[in-house]
Amino acid sequence: MLNMMNSKKMYNAYLSGAKEVMLHKSLLNRINVFPVADGDTGSNLFSTMHSIIKDSQVDTSVKVTLESIADAALSGARGNSGIIFAQYLNGLSSEMEHNSTLTIHNFTVANQNAVQYAYDAISNPTEGTMITVIKAWADALHEWHKKTNDFIELLTHSFKELETSLKNTPNQLKVLKKASVVDSGAKGFVYFIKGFLEFLKNGHEHVELDDLEDNLDDIAFAEPHHHDTEILYRYCTEAMIEGQSLDHNTIKYQLSHLGDSLIIAGNKRKTRIHIHTDEPYKVFDILGKISRITFQKVDDMKIEKDVVQNRKSDIALVTDSIADLPQSFIDEHQIHVINLNILMENTNYFDKLTIKNEKILDYVHHHRELPTSSQPNYKTIEHLFSFLLTYYQSVIVVTVSKELSGTYNIIHQVAKTFEKTNKKISVVNSKQNSGAQGLLVRACAEAIRSQKSHDDIVKDLENNIEKSKILVSVKTLDNMIKSGRLSVKQGKLANFFNLKPIVTLDDQGKGTIGSIAFSEKGCLKKLIKHIKQVDIQAYAIVHANDLTRAQAYAKKFEEIIGKEALYIEEISSITAMNAGQGAIAISYIAK
Image (cartoon, rainbow, N blue to C red; front, top):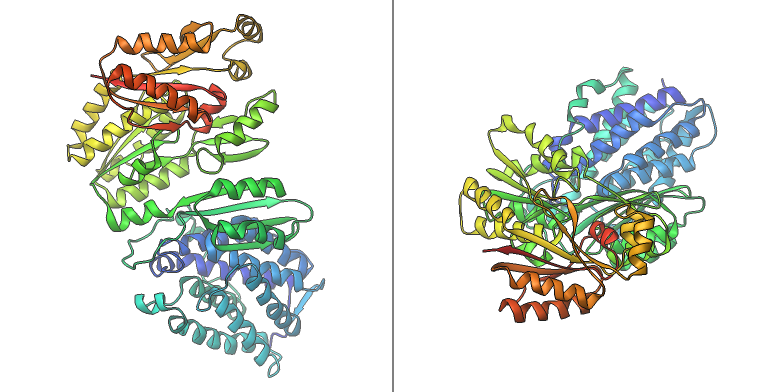
């Protein structure tokens, strides 16, 4: 008979439960249809459980041990189910007493009270999901703990009622019944309790962690789904904030109007947030004012669903966030964008997703040093390629000039690891940035739509690169001085004479000063003089937070070129912080 557990036995039982969930990652992905059929519940729970195993520690105190498990779960939590599960564990740890052993009574009471923590974390709790089976589990424990003093007997009887609750989830949620599946997150919880019970019965884990490690880096995008789930908000957005007195009610109040599927888990020191929204930058702007952001994650559910259910071509087109194109064009042509990183005030943001130009330009104006930018990480690119090669026959990637960023090199490095798939990945250095890079991507998208071959598209792209150009009228030299592109002495001299440089890229894609004027009007005259000497096939205007001036430039160029710009677009935040407030650029591809 097992009527109590010490912290080590309890700890190992929880780890056994975590391993059981990890073992069934693929199945949980396959049956994932709620709240969005994106096939990642298994992968999200895998991440959560792996964090528990790798980062939690056992202590002589049951409460301290559970706090370590809950904290690790919170750090590794991904998606709805992962964050709800982490909050359930947080509730358990909060309700546990500081003892060296865990009694049946304490275990039962803590589970009962933890239910409310899980419900409170969700803005609109939906029955037929993980929270339903968590409640059923707690209710069963409450009922059976009156009848036995043995943990194993208690858990065995309660587990049967837990399985019954899981089987009933399709009757509570129409989308599950339509798909003929039980809820994926709920099933994940059942697997967790199964592993927990197996350890107490047999004294050893069901599976070794080493057998699961190979799955750790598997892509979260799983098998294709055929269930029609409407996506009301585009971006699955997650964050972690850390502080001293975090108030979940305040966070919920400030974020609830930005989307749905809002979940807030954790404690006053560390809080995890999940929300589906169309405006992730607003989420992070609010969170940044509340406390320090230590983690950001944004997934584009719309493009994922479009590729799985409505792919328009066998060739995937990829670029990075430095390329400036209208979002409507990106969506229409299913262009995949890799967002580069911006580090500002010790917080990492995603270019064009979690930060906007207005915020970064305001920061630059009030600080001596510029934020820094960095290339995407290896795993992000690897995961993207894994997903794309599941649905496409080949991939074309158009990157920012490799003279300006390490993005080309890292993408090319990852692409080489996929050679064994026998699917072609062409990574092309645009030797451009901003609007010029956007025009090159646009031309590729049009070529894909016209059903040209992969090789012909790459050949046309390389020809267009040689005919492309960007000319940037910089309104202020302050940012160039801060970035080191101009020395302080040179900058002071240039500012004294009110010099206005026109920045461009040379044939290799290196930044250079194309010419210098003594006023903004002089800059425009030099741009007009250049444009008159070129037979232009297509052009675009981009700007740094100055649409009015950009429109005025566009009108002038239309008079000279004889046709409208293909688009007027705001530049990426990375380009903006270097070019500065009010910068205007014309980009073109010559005939």
